[in-house]
Length: 189
Image (tube, rainbow, N blue to C red; front, side, top):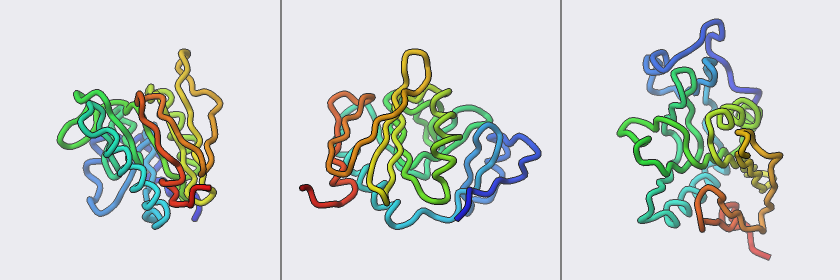
């Protein structure tokens, strides 16, 4: 399980290239570089992502902000198209029938061995430069969440870690918080 394979790194890939690739393959493009999204995420990864999405959907019911779960294309630019694991968009003008155009307010990536480096480096940089207010990385094996918040200077802070027995309040979603023990399905002590 090394890093995700890169498709023809000699050229800068665009949204038009992306649309021409086979439907049975999942790819992301970050700064024109294509990343293969295989192998499929583990059961643990999907359990954590599903639990998080389910809680967000319930807590955001009848609110303007809408939660999404992968695979949904988020188009930051012609050269930056990704499928975050779980994300929330509060500006409904960014939501189209086919995809999301522009930055979500909240992005959560669930780490897996195949994508951890990309999530912590390339994707974090993309989300930062694109103005994603809150970026959370969740490790489903070690059972912790790390939250990065956009500072006034447009860069992420050093990050804050939350353990499996803690409540994670979302700064980008006023009044919304989740119990991490429910996301990880561990007994509350």
